[in-house]
Image 1: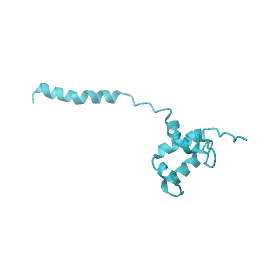
Image 2 (image 1 turned 60 degrees about the vertical axis):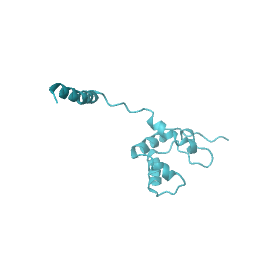
Image 3 (image 1 turned 90 degrees about the vertical axis):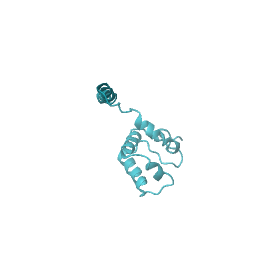
Image 4 (image 1 turned 120 degrees about the horizontal axis):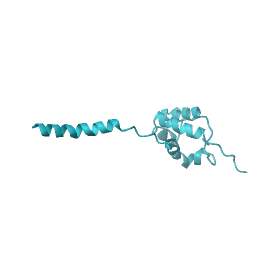
Length: 111
């Protein structure tokens, strides 16, 4: 391989790597917690304000929600579907979801 081809091959690898190394890390999504928690709305209501017999999540302590989800994840709490759903989240995602619901205001039941 001649010198020009060697330099050209090196440039194809080194230049993009150098540009990527200088690029700032993408900013975290400020809506990630809300987006993750939105998947719970079908059963637990908008923003965790459930209707009927479903357990409301709005306003619960984050630590309690984390503990419940981890218990579902491990199988310590019996469930029809929550054990499968909880297994789909990382520990960090569970903390985000719990924090989101803890920050929501529970709605008072309608008369």
